[in-house]
Length: 484
Ligand SMILES: [Zn+2]
Image (tube, rainbow, N blue to C red; front, side, top):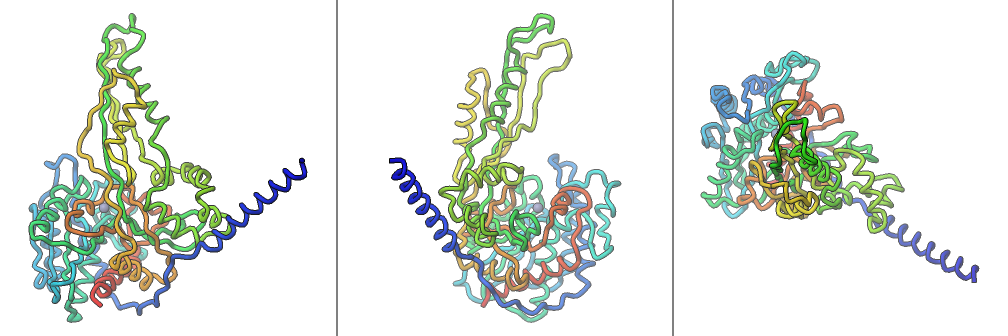
């Protein structure tokens, strides 16, 4: 009897191993090789152009009265002077006062247009004394251009304009209409810049084949198990929701406290939310990411990724062990504000807190609210939406010709780099353009290493001159690839 049982177990194990192996060996690389293109010469003058753009302190503040409107005006004038061919041919239009919309008319009106976007505003540079080079100096030193905006996102605006200027000087004429849209307020939501430009394009009945915005980069040493650089193309963006939780309870003297106070009730509710987040899982962009990087991994990881039906809990556990990993497998829960009390010996009658959620594609803000109600499970805690919010974007097509054009361009300019679709966990301007572009992709071709991530919105933002020049080559090649 025992022998028979062992035999059956043995057969089952053998079957399992053969399924795992078969799936692993059938788990083919999704990478497509492209012949590299010759590196076009990029003049050193571009360095001064980016450095010059960084010197305008086009900072966005939540309180818009703090905005230095002259800085925006001067940057716009600077762009128009620095790129005279683009100005003469693409007739930049000012929208919302400080956003710029360029149009390069294609020769074939049948072809769907392309939209390249970026933003001219930057976040404030706190602690300027701690920077190695002053944040608005645009200093050029040791092969780097320094300053706020060199990664996020003036590099994008300048690279696109340099590429267009180069092509115009070469006498190039696109078949496909190309729009360039540079917003003024991405860092505070983009409603005036991207929002208004998208509305204008919608009015003109523009329907672009695709849009390319910032959002993801070329990750070096950032994808566990992969030694090669990985170019991540964001094909979807998480949604955004803030909820205000508030409690009104008995106020009084702290010498005679009631059994439960507004602070206690609210703390329990917030703590429950942290303990019980939305469920973990792989949404479509993350599944695609796993299938694009999985085949490139060492054997055991490859086997796990190829057999997610069995190893999903293990992979999820691994992802959940880091902040970055957790952010792509869950709708995140972040308590960001807590207000109550005015005096140490007075029990406040009111307490309120804000909790911010970033919603995975496939889920909705209504589902999050329902989940919060169930988890808090306390009638005394009142819930309401707080500030602006948006649903996750649709997932853009990674099998489309336009995705292929972006992918191909990356492989031509950065030979050997792996390319993969991915999920953007923060918000970009791209989402405003959903009505006017069939596909939204988020990628700028800059190589980032672990220590670079802190520079974005942090101290010592900078870009290597060589990386910046490759960025220009990328956009030039992308425009060519869209106009075969
Ligand atoms: Zn940005």
